[in-house]
Image (cartoon, rainbow, N blue to C red):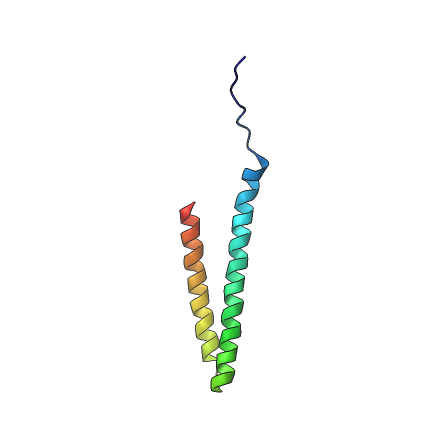
Length: 76
């Protein structure tokens, strides 16, 4: 009889990736919502005819979110 510990995968190890990915999704959604709200406020403040601030801030938010996701997935 060995006194070797069993190497069964723990339940916590299976949950952690799901928590990390769901956290990334909420982070992306939050950044895009904040960018949209800020863009709408800027468009109202400057009385723009087209929602240029909203469009630009949303594009910046999408690019920034994707960069953060790629960096966090590569970090492991």
